Length: 277
Image (cartoon, rainbow, N blue to C red):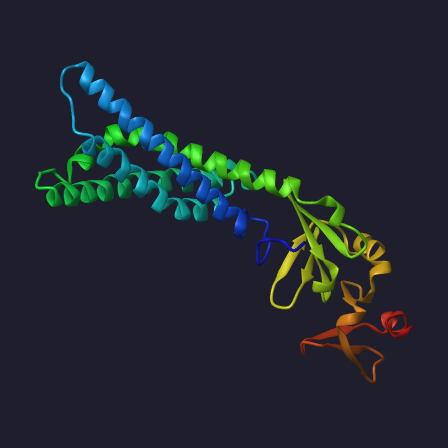
């Protein structure tokens, strides 16, 4: 099972979950339809009780435009959440980002739904002030902020639940379980060409990207000994299957040329393990 992200970093940056994110958006849209329908009829009932009945289309337009704009903004909200991931990053890093984002989402929400309502009212021969929601922004903001927080919390929970339920049985001798905070990823070793020490981490290099994994190079060397990985340098491992040729130097050091054309320097003390069958 490959990780859904093109890369994994230690700063809360996450990649999309493809089908999982699309499913989340679909479920959110269905929930928005249900809530819009409930609120529309609830408004009709309340207005009828106080003797000020409304035609069905008006509360449907009010609620529908609000829900439509929020769902249209949801992909952007998910993008922001992936880059200010509350589970991984310290509070001081992601809270200011989400405060600014929530204010921006609310502002776009009131302006866009006002414009849509003004257009729809004009089409049916009625009048509506497109700036009315903006004039009532403090009221709308009190509703938008909890909605923003709920969407972020639901998305974080959705992603964590999906990752927790990904089949752990796939992690075996040919799959490496990579942990990054509360996340687990299962990376096929056939995709890893070489590994390099990076402080308290190792960097797993693939064709065009790399993944950080919190472990020592020595520990990973022991773990991958039966998976075709050998040490070529005190800070570097390589997968035998990714090696195209080995070029020796007069000093005894050598250059490992990978099948994709990349070259890695090897130390002479590790030459024999690499060349042994």
